[in-house]
Length: 249
Image (cartoon, rainbow, N blue to C red; front, top):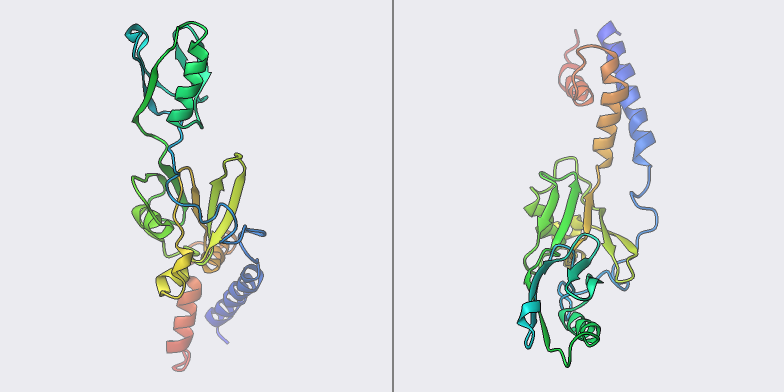
């Protein structure tokens, strides 16, 4: 066996050891909430819109126009208004806020008539990251499926693990709900129910595939130890063995 063959055999053994070590790492998420559980298949739009931080509100007083205000909901979910000062509005529907303001202003005004209109909506955002072409904040203006949201973020990278896409959703109780979705079945057309609707503030994470993790491990712990060893050494070695191994040198 030549020196080149000995080096090749050693590196291939190391690569195969990495495969054996990392391939059995198990699922990316240990205990995901199964699809179909409460909160996982909620409709895209709620029956009534709930106010979010950043929304712009137009608050009108029919008999006291001097109190009319346009207010932007602060990050803490509050706005400031004359006479009643600060009030928390995030999470309320416009109808609920109208009722709350009416009660608060009854102390200062006789039979107040108040109307609340949401002029600008900022709550329809999701966050996409991981092995996608261009992650970040995505605006969703209408019903959007998980696969559509990922494609709008540049699609999957070659290193993506598409059979275990992670979705983190915030419930009405402000608790995280973590689920995994097999988009490979969607792309194969075998289970379209996996392509769930995304909701505002969903966090979508496309993890790295096992093969990509192996290549990263080889790159970080093996390839860099020897100057000049190609990044795709394992593939090149297998190719060399297949084509050149029979000819012999």
